[in-house]
Image 1: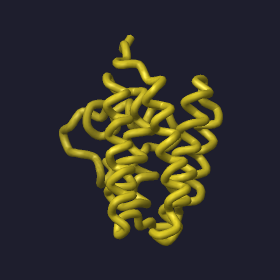
Image 2 (image 1 turned 60 degrees about the horizontal axis):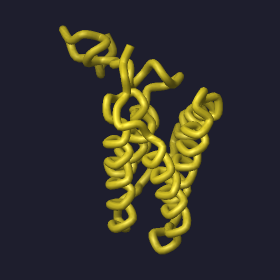
Image 3 (image 1 turned 90 degrees about the vertical axis):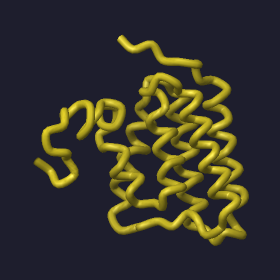
Image 4 (image 1 turned 120 degrees about the vertical axis):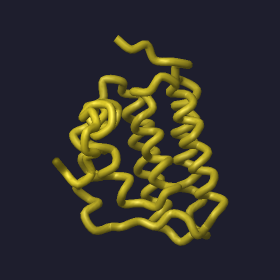
Length: 149
């Protein structure tokens, strides 16, 4: 058992649910753990939205966290050590998405959010604006619900 596993819990429902692990070569937490709570949540909601029952709601949550990050200059720290290979894997997975629109917009969001975090707060405007445009495009195209098979 890994230290993060919960003893006695279902592997699928608690320790490694499919909407966290099955769609990318890495679990989303491997990426979000490199960022603060606000930035990590924005990333999480975008990367998981298609695998949840209400993708539009998750995208709106991502937009909320992006707005919060924009309004709070103290937000957005990043732990760079080990980030590059994790980020590269997610960007590669998104480039291979069957839904090219989602892959392109999610990649754009991810790149711009990471760029914003790397910048001084007074220089983040353009990158945050581009990240917001990517989320807004995804929201406009997202279904109201996902039918699970």
